[in-house]
Image 1 (cartoon, rainbow, N blue to C red):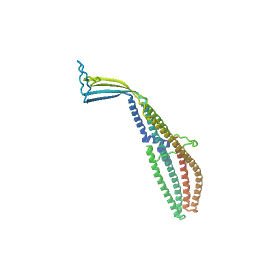
Image 2: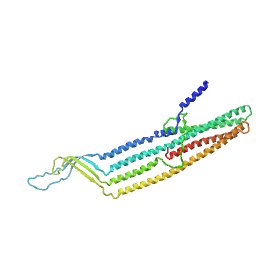
Image 3: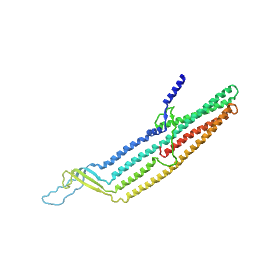
Image 4: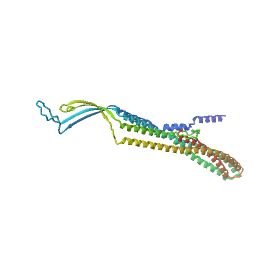
Length: 419
């Protein structure tokens, strides 16, 4: 009774302490752990600074200037008027000014540049989203590899146990001299071969788990349970929801915004300005005294002809839009081919599983018959092992194909942007 209680307690302790790994959790953790995600905030911060710099163009631009000069000659008055003494200006001159320029209207240039910057930021964010989405493909590969390896190991352990039980029976017959010792040796050799396969599988499994841990940034215990995910797919309709499609549209929007920037270059620009100064001479060129002065005014600047440079640049942008449309068309074509491939994979594994069931039924029947014949001495251990291994391989193929079918479905959903 105490032994039963101990076993039950151990069983529930194992369940309580075991870790469950789920595919959707791996997706989520892989995204959260991916270093590239941090760049989104960096890109946003950089864009905010660029927008601030553009907005500063609306503020007054203030410059402080100072100069001292000496010139070889100055303006002279050659008039000889009685009673009027016009002094000659000094050849050394001094001037310091505070210049203020205020943009009044820029033809929408700054506003257009800000829109381009906002779209550039959106494009960079989308490129990061595209890369992050590809993580799901890598997670699928590692996760389902682990499931396949674990199932292989499980089936090999069952086969090893069955052969071990058969070996116990054979060894008693060898001791009694009723069975040739080579039969027992063959079974022992087969167990060793199975151990070798298990070692290979465990090594591959550990490597895949370590890569998954690094990708997702999670700890995975030795007794972790990897759940078999389930998914329902509809392969009858092609519908591409990949995030890369947004990139094409964002790039076309960016080119349209750039065209608006070019259009703004053709618009007139109005500035207000003012100058506060002190120097010799001041505004009165006939005075040789230091004077303060000021100037206020407005200025209109309009590039009315630039030899069709703007029009040509707009045409270049239109060509680039056509290139984007063509690239999108190529991308969609490739995705349709990938859709046909994934659809065929799902159909292939579905058909293989049905045949696996038939094969397992036959191989199990043969193996049971061989076991009975071997026990009665009608066949050798080699014949028995061949049939047992064939049954084991049939079961392994069945389990692998089941996992590969689920993986094909998840790959199908990921490739079409539906996860």
